[in-house]
Image 1 (cartoon, rainbow, N blue to C red):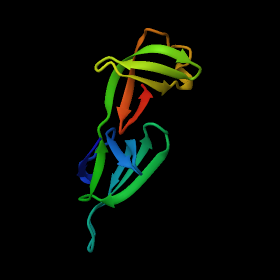
Image 2: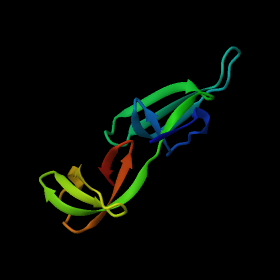
Image 3: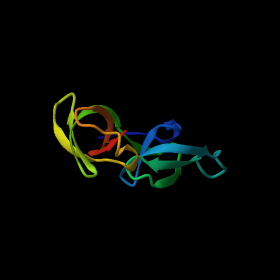
Image 4: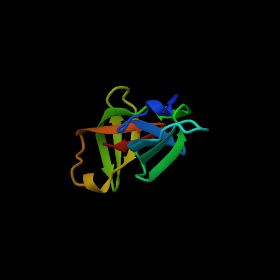
Length: 125
């Protein structure tokens, strides 16, 4: 899910959709309006799920999409290799999620963990 907003209202640390990928804004620079043009904003962002750095340059008054990023909790049901099966603590739905390298030894069956969900994708927090 995503919402629309103006580029000028985006701040560092917030989220933005670039190339249909939710990204966290890490840098923001604006230029002054010139004689024949509007003020421009350059936004540097890093993808939440893939870690790829992306940037866009756009007029400050232009519209862009902002993803709805939710932090949720889930209980680990089972662990198989580099995949974990989680159960959401609100709606009790089951799904599989990839385990990142830094969390491989820390996950235990029955333990409650946090994960991020945005635009149909999930990632351990």
